[in-house]
Length: 479
Image (cartoon, rainbow, N blue to C red; front, side, top):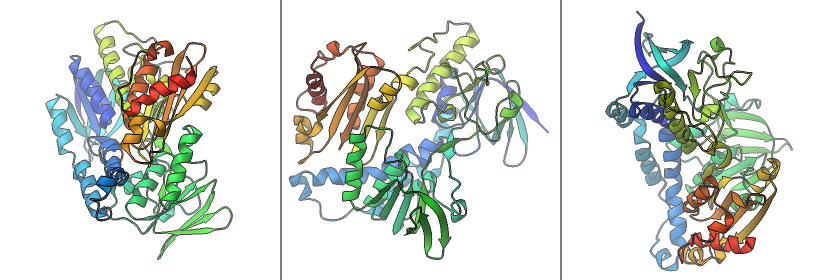
């Protein structure tokens, strides 16, 4: 028998985005229920951000120690791969979500386990594992926060070869002797870095380049370091066929070469988890990305809010910025605007308003935890020019900055600014080098705050730190 429960807001998906939407609306005085078919905590907690960085951290720390002669003298052995995997398991909570479930309960958020499907206006039908169903009826809003999954390209034999996706790569119980990575984006590059450090032979097939969306000088340094570590990087390589046999996987390339490996990791993009969400009943395409306005309301084909505006989509599923921190940022905006609309409070949906996800378009920060790290926020030079901005780009040798030279002997790195010449503000920042991750937030503040370059001269970097590169970039800019 179908039971029905009425709440103010129903959230489909209990990853970090769904959790944060629900938390914001509860803090705003509304009631919320979340629906989850897998682990509460989502991709980031178990198969992405946390366990991925745990896989990479030990190797990064070891590299840092070996760059300092006194500390290097204390290093007596190689990386312990088993210990790395054990620590990874702890950061994935052993793939047990009880801690996250307890947080939901403590926050006053209801949890319904099962598959959620939109079955009518403001109505989500949850089908549990035992086949029982519950209708959740939302008084104000339904939020889709179902995220994405790995996309497997239609290469002959690939799907049948049982390829790894990011999930298998991050949760593997042992290190393969030889791993082939297909795809040169962030996931592929980080996993090539991690598994080479853990002892695997790695072949890296990057048809469209390595980290193609960052500044070329940053990706070039990553490629150089990968190759120096023993990774075979094959930029432009086309995969035409994959076959698994008793000896592993055989990958046939466009030039006829066959690459042999124990496992193949497919990291060629993502697809939205919207296949069986009931979108067709709303006039939307099942399996599609959800287009949204600045307040995260789902739009139809004519850019109008679906229904009377009760359906929202936050996080990767709307394709605005496929990053956990941006999804959580969207969750805050969506949760707050749902409360505002429910209570009749003013809606601030203009650029940089409380209820608008403006940063998704102008100030998205990202750290790629490769060797060396790549950090970027806002535009690259190419994307700024493609957006029609009149920009000037400047770069500086990060290794010539005192803080970086002290950080590691032989420090190699580079940083760059992209400046909008018409407005006199920074619209992009990129840096590559060991431990550059901590530089990204200062750049994010400068870009989101639209701080004039003339004012940035008054933001004096502490000496001797790597942040001194800001002064050097301004000097190079000559303003």
